[in-house]
Length: 317
Ligand SMILES: Cc1cc2nc3c(=O)[nH]c(=O)nc-3n(C[C@H](O)[C@H](O)[C@H](O)COP(=O)(O)OP(=O)(O)OC[C@H]3O[C@@H](n4cnc5c(N)ncnc54)[C@H](O)[C@@H]3O)c2cc1C
Image 1 (cartoon, helix red, strand yellow):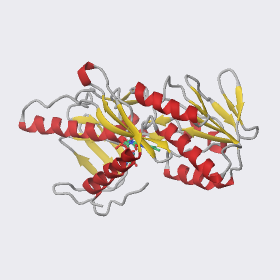
Image 2 (spheres, helix red, strand yellow):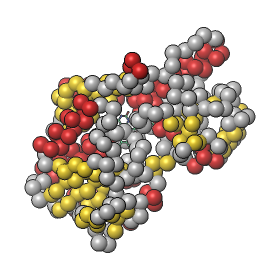
Image 3 (spheres, rainbow, N blue to C red):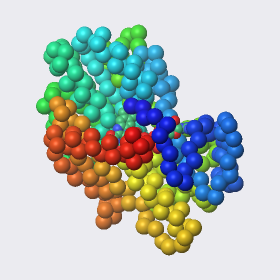
Image 4 (tube, rainbow, N blue to C red):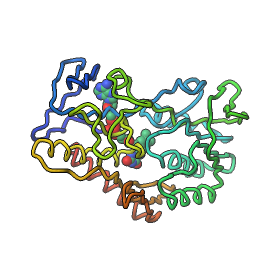
């Protein structure tokens, strides 16, 4: 999904669409393809990139729906699919939006039913994780139940290391598995410019999880590029942005902001128009809580409203 930036006009905000080529976190200087900027406070939010080449055979013979191009390629491929085995594999952790692989397979189930070829298709999801949404046992059980009711095979704690597009087999550590259509959740990486800037540790931007501050004074990071111990999702980027804004305001005006609480509202597509609502709070009483409401059609309406509010607030659409 793409939203236009044309109407992004906010009081006190100057929006420039440029490519960041360098960041010096010591001096808080950012170089782009058009200019250089010096900042008192620098907030890094460059998201996560995908490394399709990290999985041998994936570029040549796999499909993904995590990028716009990838989703369009898969959209064009699906009508050509006549049945057989679909293998959907989470290729590494961390990845964006923990429910998205399961939402994908459940929506694919509906699509295949609609085309009358579900009975001619086997669906199998493979993940290195122990459960679909590890923070929420309730939501995980609901997803697992829904997949089981739709005859979708589910394998945890296993990884696909590569695929052979000519032979149409996926390589696991100790065996191969044939497929007719391979869909992968690609390996995620921090954007290279952040590695070059010296902001990363263990692959992601190092931050204090309670303040989102990097070890460099006045430099913060949030969203998918930062390692906060919380899954990569837009709702957490949003709550982290509020925490960073409070931190910056407090360092100008004084006062002590509340630590980042890791809250977010996740809507989980279960297929057939049913949506679950999971209220995640990572630091509730020192341990994460994530109860689920639904699934039901009413949460589909709530999800649409949730999106509309943000489109209006951020993009004036
Ligand atoms: C299929 C799918 C479904 C999802 N569903 C949900 C959901 O239901 N709920 C939810 O909360 N989250 C969901 N997510 C996750 C969500 O999209 C991300 O977690 C969120 O967008 C992260 O925000 P961010 O600002 O950190 O990164 P992004 O939104 O990726 O923004 C980073 C921006 O920085 C830009 N950028 C990168 N490098 C440079 C550079 N060098 N110079 C200039 N610009 C640069 C990128 O182009 C991008 O525009 C989903 C993700 C996928 C793929």
